[in-house]
Length: 459
Image (tube, rainbow, N blue to C red; front, side, top):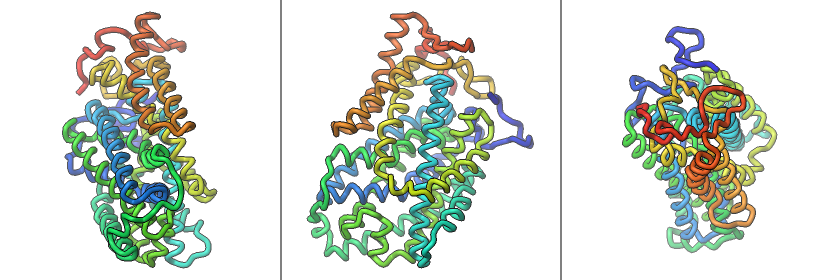
């Protein structure tokens, strides 16, 4: 494993600290963090999910469901973000500390892989929309070009993402207001809109699963940006406001187009409204910003997965894979993709929160950090957190299979509660749970004062 920060000027230097804690000198203001997060969560495919679910409800009922989904994501993202702002570590490094080295690799593969999937979905949407605007029968060259273009700022790092955000967020807001005015006018006013009847059947649990699933993976990885926050309070406020604002807007405008025109596909709804050519220009920058953040996320995950202290090769490789997926039809499997995310990803965050807040009492034990902020001394597997993750995954899977409750939320809550329970069970019933067959240093459940949270805080 590569440890320690590469000196500035060295060939392999990455200014975003993919394998270390972000030092205080590199932290950013709450305004900069807000822009980073808002540009990430202004995710146009979330509109697609909103369109696909709103057709199953009266529009007023759909708005309530969407508000619940946005609030759940905001609370979840805020708690996950505080963990990274306090430690300075990315989500995959926090996962490594909690689940162990092997568990961290699984999380990096899953979280990075889902972001590659979203990168591909966004490319497909962008290629389709621009192709319609330009009357192109063949869109694969557009997908290829946009795949390269939308990974550029991610390759540059967080600073490049923030600069793009200041440009794209206002443009996306303009687009959304424009769509709202046209849709409400075309449908006959707000009263007529609220009276629209569902054109298909969908349960509340299924709708929440899809809506939450659009960004449960992104919310789990919000630490990739909140680790640059200067304070926990600043991170908490910036994350909550950015997430609930952006998600609510995306749900509303996506559902609005669907309710007004009976077309759950946002791209086709724009086409019906005659806004394709004009909307394409604004969506180009909006989707560009979203995909830059997505590429950044899978770049950081790839750096941890392969223990390389440079995210840039994985930004390039993930973007190439995303282009291939976009060209082979991942967009057609969006609902299945979201359901899978809602089952497998949320329990990771639940296990992390349970271990960090309830076992370590809000502080990462100093023994797990190197002098320069790398993660070290962790076991191959922390069995209590692995058991908590699997328990949460089963809970989410059963909820999805039998349409009971909100599977993603169940996965988070069950895993968070199970983490301290399994910690106590394994510590008392079997003694120290090393979970370390390879013989590396570090214990899985030390049972010591440091493990329980009385270790010297890292930040």
